Length: 294
Length: 211
Image 1: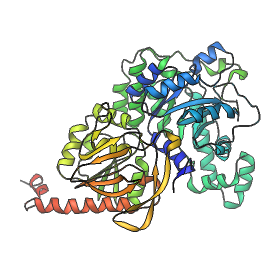
Image 2: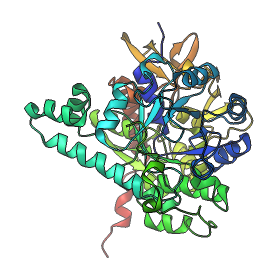
Image 3: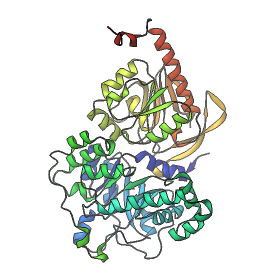
Image 4: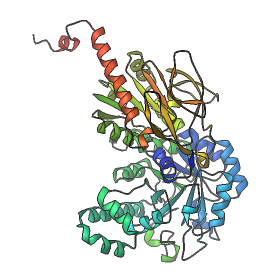
């Protein structure tokens, strides 16, 4: 007998994406460029985060027609974003046969208290996190893959680094605790006890964890890999740069050869201008995407 | 026994962990020169388009074909099976072509059609094998020299031709070691027949003669 949409099937697809780059695209043409550059998957969205940040307004799920055209234009898996808590956008994407749903802080949240009950879906979900408690809460809700949030649309990697280091530190701390302290640790993290015990025992997250939010160069991608990311999402960093195809191909190589500085030096040459970056401290607290839906 | 695991992208860590549990010595391969001295090579699951791009870009094509020509066993899972296959239903897919099968990519449908199910291994039929099919390819045809070791819905899902083994599912995502042990058996047999084929004395001495 066959079983569909089980946890191993959901987490298994994320395992296959490891060591790869997932690229934000807004059109079928961009999706093709991403696929040809070696992306393992594309994220279909209406506007890249840098434009959402610049233009403002409510950011929603992408027009299904564009998603459909992207799906038919590439052979790699296609992901799409839904607003935090917007389970109907998720139902629509599942009906369209999307391969992974990103319940994302980059879009305007639809619910300020609750995330989507992701166990109800056969399609797997990826969610963002800035720390271990947030990561484990999303897994408790049924996410099958994680990504550190970073600060999308800034081209500034500092928040991605902060979130990856925070999660690594919190895992190390849990792993060092005696069994009897884990319940209190779960209370402090605001995370499900069973997941806290699992992380303490295995000394790692139980699912694949990518890095996202602010990656703009091959060096940024390799930095996140060396810090322990399983792969990277690149949003505005590719199609807001001068030569998207070339930069995309270089970031793909950087994620495979992240530990080889000679290769990194070679592939980082003459890529044209990277996207213009934003200093995080110049942003208003209210404009930070990472604090949405924690 | 040193088993290379192609580590360009995908689930290479899981293959390495399972091989280690079976007593082999896995080695992650990111550059062609790292293939030297392997007794077998695993091509893992992942995205076949991404892996093929990196295979071409880093000059892996000829070294991999040479390795296969030396009868070093290959084991491809899912995307890895696509990369070993000789024929593809779409004209875009390029591959090594070292096993006489024809495959269709993503033939079960999209991710919501991905599934797990029990299959029977011909070399170990007593217990079912829990097979995970994730955006899996389908093997449509097999050549006359290909042995089918497991089927699902009548289609071959685990096949072997001489020193090449290919699965459309993911044994590396389960705890079941049987298929990896079967592959290590192929590697051992191939290593033995290679030493028999080489005339004594052992060729490695020819480089280390002290003048």
